[in-house]
Image (cartoon, rainbow, N blue to C red; front, side):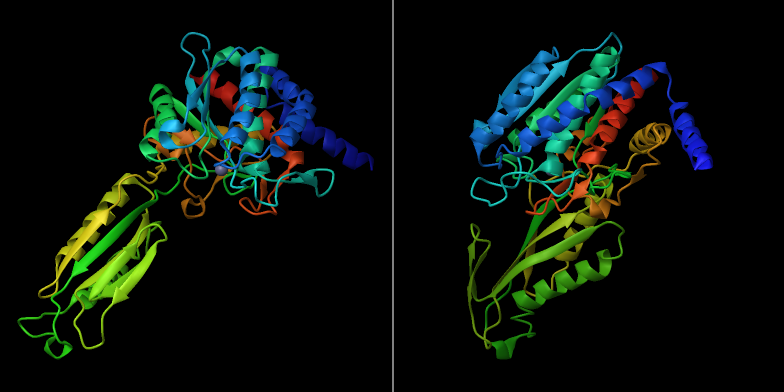
Length: 431
Ligand SMILES: [Zn+2]
């Protein structure tokens, strides 16, 4: 018993010893504020803010806006009517001269609209909360706010200039997407670093320094309609469906080995005539077994880990689509919009190292990178290209987001707040 006691004292001493006086003060403040933070999370989870419930999103935004106002932030509501969404909360606070400018990204909306049965939190036990948006990402929003409060209470908020953007349409982006993401992009253009508080893969031990892009493509193929008995002849050629099959097969054989790249043909229609239904994503075809197909259409998506990889893949696909079988013609179109990739840059790796050091110094263990294949698209992707470095996934741990079983580990809330606060502090000292 006695030996165990000494060992515990040594462990807690050695972890604390990694923190200087200022950092210990910040860590203490995070602990002191944890009750308040938990209470706010309960309140936020019980407020419906499904993306299309504009009033709900706005209410969550207003509540957080008041908090930022009280802390001396300059807050604005970026109206979302131009992209048919509620809008975004933007809060800015200038730090001391020369302080690095850090963009903190959250979102106010959830996937649970008012008609969904999942509306209120319940406690699974003393420290695990089940509820809509608890990790995706009201937990992350609370971590942003209370990391900043911990810094302020300890007297170190001036070390950083902070711009917080909490979007109202992360789960279901408004359209046009350019307008929907404008607030994030503009804030990123002013910032040195971008930090996202999504739950990442929902583990306390990981963070995200690379996310793949996500965008769509379509392929339209035309062939020469004729009686099937004449297919392959000099006058008729291969027909639209054989050409479509050739292209898809070549996409598969030439591109499937590329690490982190995926592309998926999701729907296909082909025959004599095709009537596409773009609203319901589908359509009808007419044709017969004894008629050479005149048309074929495929819609798909593509995900790449870097701009370079995406461009390379697009070029290969375009080349494949251009080498047509006789009397066929293919048009491959990469759709505008979508999510750009968050590249695994040296700067991002450095940020992860710094964050991992903070975590180790707090006695929480190292933080490692989530595999990009397991990291979905998120708002930080629109910021990443403009800043020196970016990192995401600093939100609350838990799991099962986007389902009625979504849960958050409340026992990690103050650890996450503390870790985020010290990370910001060290970014401020370093620069
Ligand atoms: Zn989210």
